[in-house]
Every structure is written in C-alpha cells, then in structure tokens.
Length: 168
Image (cartoon, rainbow, N blue to C red; front, side, top):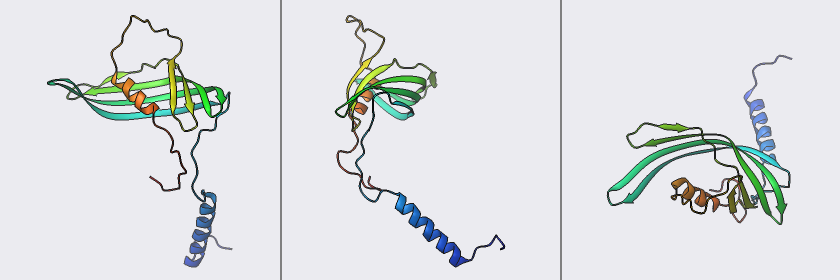
C-alpha cells in the first residue's frame, strides 16, 4: 500500500469523521459555570492586566497613565462549605509597568501582601483581608486607583444562568 496522496472523496470522509468526533466531544447544550473547590485544593494561575486610566483630581488637575501588570498567583483553599470558599492568595511573581502620559515607564517587581478571601461558586468575592500585617488605626492611606479597581473586580461574577457555546 502506497502512502502519500489522498483522494478528494477520502479526504472529505476523514474531515466529516473528525468533525463528527469533535462535535460529539463538545458540550451538547448550555452549561452552568461554577467553581467546584474542596478544602486543600491548590491552584496556580497567571493574572495579566493592561489598561489606560484618566484621572481627574480636581479643576485642571488630570493625569493619564498606562498600566501593565503581570502576576503569578498561588491559591490554597482553606475551607469549603455551602458553596462558599475561604482561599489564601499569595503572589509568587509580579511585574508592574506604569507609564504616565509623555513620561518614562517605571517598572516594579513588588509583590502584594498575602490575602485571605471568601468567594462563592460564581466567583463573587464577599470578603478580602491582608494576612500577616496589622494595619495601624492612625495610619490613613489615601484611596488608591488599584484598590478601587480591585473592589470592582471583586463584584464580577460568573453568569447566574446557563451559558451556551458561542454566547457573548
């Protein structure tokens, strides 16, 4: 038997067979996206963020900044009960590039402090606290734009209903 060229009908048959196998492996309908974690689970992931911000601090005071953050995180599920997970989050690597409008890029390799979060099956963060650092009650820090962004991201959740392939 000589291998090499395949006739058009044979190639078409193989393509139809591969397509049928591929479609049978795909979800047949809508699925509900949920976290399914258990105590002791360890997760590692990469978090990348790129954004442009335009701050207006007051009359005539505006600042435009581009920001890129590339982090690697490790999460350990400390408790799982009734669809609520207590998770310790540690940043193992992080690089931040901040570029003000018309300015020079400033790079930083600072890692955020470890945190403990409470998250539900849909990914909604209900609680976030820093581990290993006791805040000084007299030490008032200004509100940071990244803190505001984190608060917004904590409120994003997986869809409540089913999701079908191709939904946007």
